[in-house]
Image 1 (cartoon, one colour):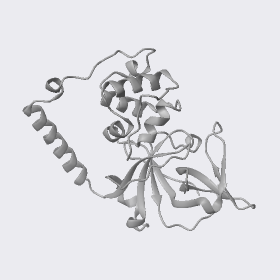
Image 2 (cartoon, one colour; image 1 turned 180 degrees about the vertical axis):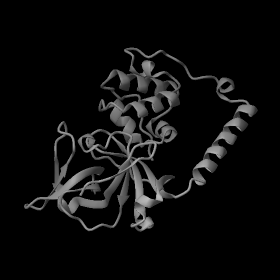
Image 3 (cartoon, one colour; image 1 turned 60 degrees about the vertical axis):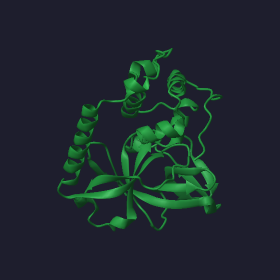
Length: 253
């Protein structure tokens, strides 16, 4: 992936300006920091360049990983906190060992959960403006086995939603959706779709009489989108969504 030069970026909000300040101060770009927080680089671009407001959970995550408070991120002027020196940033041997033990303990706890199935997780996908988020699944996500017993496991994957264009359907920024691949298209269902040349999005999809695809959000503040239907690839149909800690919600048909 080509790293974007941030020197000419013009933020739209105080949050975007401060986040850009801290990224430049730490010598990081969208890709590097996105990898650190488990988000696609485009998610950071939308915050800084498009003025998108992340949800409280994602805002807290960003502040923790950048090393400043939420108040600093939202303030009219950043605190100017500088990068720590290598000596300051490098944890001691005891701290590293403690971190490893905690990670192994947590992984053991997750693996030993009864009646849990692990599905491929493709990170964050936008619920609003189409943007390319494709990548190999680098994570797995635990899902209660009882909720997917009627599905072919190899056809399921999970995706964490970024944005609020589905909020009126109860799906919020930071929620995770369970998606069924290789489905036959039917009008009016919620799909993960790839619009060729525009990337992916999660929307209700309708096939119009004139041969176009109508992509409909579940937020009256967003407009519908129209594309030639032949430019639309159905990645999968949204079957469930849940909010951490896992609470499965079956989508109404």
